[in-house]
Each structure stands twice: as C-alpha cells, then as structure tokens.
Image 1 (tube, each protein chain N blue to C red):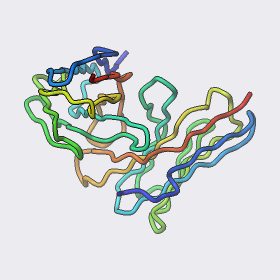
Image 2: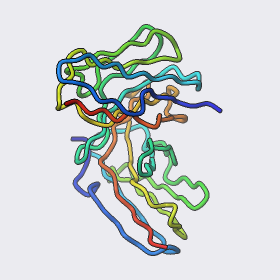
Image 3: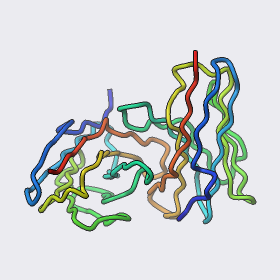
Image 4: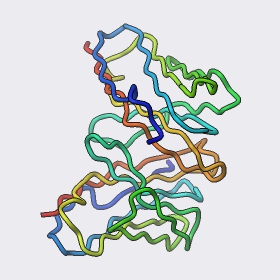
Length: 112
Length: 112
C-alpha cells in the first residue's frame, strides 16, 4: 500500500474549532492533492501542493507537505458544520501523466 | 459550466448480465478515470485513458472493460456482472498535471 495507517481516522469537533488532518505516504510523489467528499457526492478537489512547495493556502484551508518525512497535512480554521465530510489525500507516482492514488480518508464531523 | 456527468445514477443488474456505465465530460480534459468506492477500501482505480481511443488498466481491472470513443466520453463495461461488483462507481476527468481534476456524482450499482 502507498499509505500509512494514520490515514484511517475519524474526527468529531464543534463548529468554530480548528482541525488538522494528516496523511503519510510510502513512496515518491510529485504532488499531494487534498479532496473533500460530502455524503452522496463525488470527491471535490481542494488543494494541490507540489513536491517543491512546503505550504499552500486557500481560504480557510492550509496544506503542508514535508517530503523528507513523506507526510502532508490539511488544516481547516474556524470550521463550519458544512465542512462535515470525508477528506482524502492523493499522491501521484506516475512521474508523467497524472494518475492519483487515494488514501482511505479522514471522516470529519463538525457539530453546530 | 464544465462538468463530469455519469449515467445512470442508480442501476440494479442481475448476475451474469452486461452493464455499461457512461461518463461524459465537458472539461476538454485529455485524461479520464474510472474508480470504485467501497467501505474500507477508499477509491480504487479500475481503468483510465489518456485520450480518445486509448485505455489503460488501473489497479483492479479484472472483470471490467473500458472504452473511450471520443474526448468527451468514457464507458465502463461489466460483461458478466457479479455481486462482488456491487459498489459506487465514480468517473473523473483531469489535465495532465492534476491541476484540474473533477469527479462525477457517481453511479450506485447493485448486482443481484
């Protein structure tokens, strides 16, 4: 498997709290991409961070990448109930045309 | 608005029957992908395509065929459906670098 065990997570928090989700991967990747999947929907792209970047922000979202430890994190500040979803990270080992491999995800429940 | 549309949204098939899942994208992406999503396994890649007329095997291709007759359309074919193929199937389209990667809303397939 491409993924470390810490990818299997479930988090439950209150609205307004900040949260950080982590994923670790075992082999080289050119990018790490974070996705969010709400119940009954397809995954939606959130942030893509490339191997030469350490941090990327988008609104309340912040992704980090540490290639030396082969790990990435996604932080959400000031969570909302609408952030309730499963969050996946994905890596690309293809070295060419993008072909992502997905982790199993972190289930996040934000209580209003 | 650019999108990935899957049909049907729900399908009940009988064991041994033929099932075709369709996917259409208006993103003008070269790449298209078929995944299945099962509890405990996350998203697993079945087949993908880097352009019209080409298909490649993903991580779990057994029991599935794919067809990419045009830039916009990518089909997944189950020639002899089995109950183990009961799952939610997602189609996605993407550019070569992963900067733009869009999923459809999924097809829920039940094989009885």
